[in-house]
Image (cartoon, rainbow, N blue to C red; front, side, top):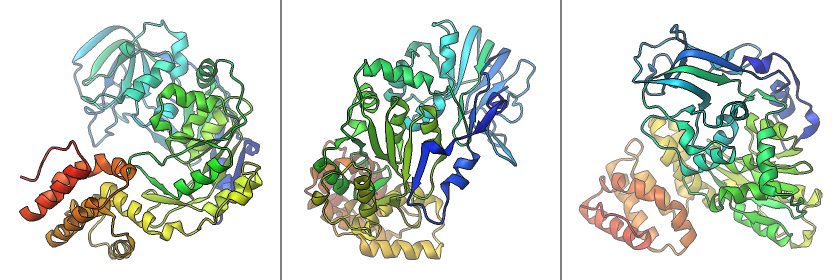
Amino acid sequence: MGDLMLWDSWRRIDPALHRFVGFTGFDPAKRVLARMRLSDATPAMSLVHDALFVPISVAAPDIWATGGVMTGAGDAIPCLREKWEDREEYLGLREPVDVEPVEVIDGEVLYLGWLFDSFGHCLLESLARIWALAHVDPDTPVVFQYVPGHVPQPHVFALLDLFGLRRERILLPSGPVRIRRLLMPDPMLLAKSIVHERAGEPYRAVAERIADGAPLSEQPLYFSRRMLPASQRAHIGEAALEEVLRDNGFRVEYPERLPLVEQIRLAATHRTLVTSTGSASHLAFFARPGAEMHIFCYGNLLEHHIVTSEMVNLPTTYLHHLHGVHHPCSALAFDLQAATAFLADAGLLPRRSLIPYLPTDLDTSPEHAEAWLFTFYLHFARSMPPSDASLNAWLDTLLDRVRPTAWPVFIARAAMPEHTSGAEAETAMRRYAAALAGETDALRRERHRASVLALLPHALARCTPETRVLAQEATDRLLPATRSVAE
């Protein structure tokens, strides 16, 4: 039971679908592609009588705090997540837990695994068992593992609805539930190791329905990350790249500003897709036959990009033209010369004379330093020891490099008591107030708004009353519709 079906019959992935450009000191074909597998095993559904569904919050932390399913006899059902040459990794309960059900469901329920809010993970993993919908009664309830007491984002329900799963069918239990007849279909992929050759069929059906017979456009399409909130990984230099692409006839789109159906329609109706590592790259699930993708990556090439391409038989070029320093997930910078040179050689930039000089050292720019520091303080600082000498030296180097207008960095730094003293927080918040007061870029204010407003109470609590007033006034004026927290 679990993911074992995938390993019943498989073959190595044909590398002809995948092309790697710009990787030095790291051979993706040997390190990533060689361990990926393509399965042609026969998927099946297991029927578990009197199953006990254990939600995430109930599972004992010393066992595995991700919930799972137990048989009527009280045995944990392992859900194999990844299988390597020398080990196996499991997702779900590894051994039974002693819990009592708060509810009993007498009918039949379809189990579809874990529900992720992240667009990419939802597309890839939450839909891994979606094939089973076509083999059960259309009114059969469906159960997912999800954080009890929380509500999934609207885009999650919109995505599931496109695959035929209505909101009223979805169960998200907040306590243990006894299910008399639980159907557990085999997943069609494991994100890091293996994918079934038919895993892409549900996605192709959605793409064909939304495309509605439209031919593939010859205009290259670029999915940009530039309008995402600043709390998400920044790609420095993307605005300059967009300018070059538009000058050469590309269509540039910001997926998060479009309805989900329109995002899919774009992916399904363009022959050439270009994007960078992140959620937008997973829109390639809806590419139709005859399309190709070029994806800008950093050194840590992720296996799920390989899975995406294999699922829809999409020829993909992985371009190592994004670079980061110290902690690459915090912020990345385009190697714009290499990126545009490749696209020009590929025939996608016919007007080479319009390509301006594009620097290659954006990862040493003030913009990169600002993005790196902001994301570090927002997401990573609390997990880093203040006594880390090399990290502190790096922080000092970047702080010297940031531009005077880096108000997001100043407030993020002030809100982190683990890495700043009270005096440093006071100085940082005065710099924040002065820099924000001079900010004229409305887009920059909007991208940072949510994160800055969340940081504001923590930062103000570390300041003198005079500085609190200065910072609050600047925030109210430039980031309106906020509740005053100065008092």
